[in-house]
Amino acid sequence: MEGDVMDKVEATATVCDFDPISGSIPATKVEITVSCRNLLDRDTFSKSDPLLVLYTQGAECKQWREFGRTEVIDNTLNPDFIRKYILDYFFEEKQNLRFDVYDIDSKSPDLAKHPTDFNDFLGQVHCTLGEIVGSPASRLEKPLGIDEAMMDMSAF
Image (cartoon, rainbow, N blue to C red):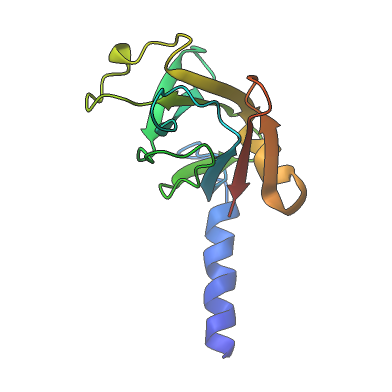
């Protein structure tokens, strides 16, 4: 049992150590889970087929980069996405995140075929990774900006 405790202490110490030679900043891995509620129904004969795209913003260039996508969940307005995002959380750095939700009606992975227009775009949330990690129980809920739709982001 003592060995287990010491292993954990040593593992924790390596995450927090700053290496002045390499200049690495202390970081920890964070797993983000996302779900949405009350999405708009953009389909005529069924419910929306939501997909979530996570973008991160570089500190130096301010350009948004696609970090990853969830699976498409067919015919739901209340998706609980299975795909989780693993991000490095840097304690002293502001890490901007953008979550875009689309109704996907095509097999194409090209979002240009799903333009951000009235028919395919279901909403967007901006926040920082620090907001999610620092919120009560590491759970942040924010409006998607369209109607009553909400997004829930949890960090573990």
